[in-house]
Length: 278
Image 1: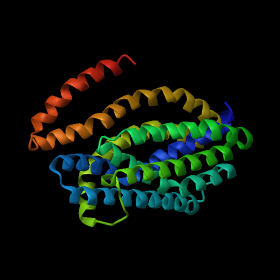
Image 2: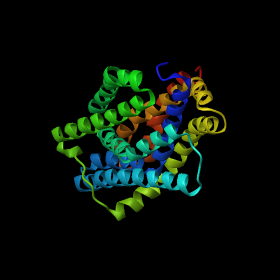
Image 3: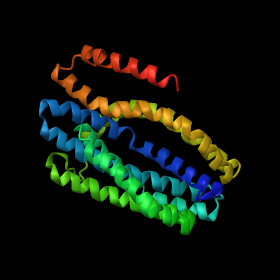
Image 4: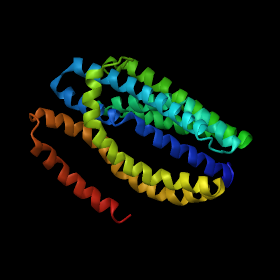
């Protein structure tokens, strides 16, 4: 309401672009999350350390590469964009590596089933947006929204980094490991293809409406489309909570596929009854 329909549509379009660019990690974050959970049960701390480092490094590189590709695309094809939107886009692209790094750090906590720091990170994000973001948006409109976005990212990075210092097993560093990249890409790309379907279904309509019509139309469309996103978040939240435990159980039972099958059928059946009425 504070941004108004036009700037709400502009911000919704920028958020859609962020989601599309998050696909440039090529499934490495998801694959590393599952591999870390699996190796935890085996106590393979050397492999876990290399997986954490590989994931964090690849996440930052993917954010940087995605940003460079978008900037190159805009200039080579001489795409005509609203000046305010273009300025906002460049700010978003500048912080994209940091955004990807937060995804990687969050995934490390989830792999260890340590949800408290990530839950508190969401609380910090909400508090910053309410206490600082709303006044910034009120006085500076879309520029205030961008400032709030940058502030939230900085606060989350600081919090997650500080939280890892309390638990050295979750500390990661920037190291390139081509051996693990090849393995993680082989396992992560199929997972990312599934993500592509969901993200394209939720982002391309907003991007298309904003490009061919107006940002004001995109704002109204994004508001109506938010219900669909809420339904999709239910199974995603379910998988975030369940999969690390399943991976450790799978490792404990010597990689027996029956363990996964028996552990998944009950919860998935219950989830279906919860989601389908929506």
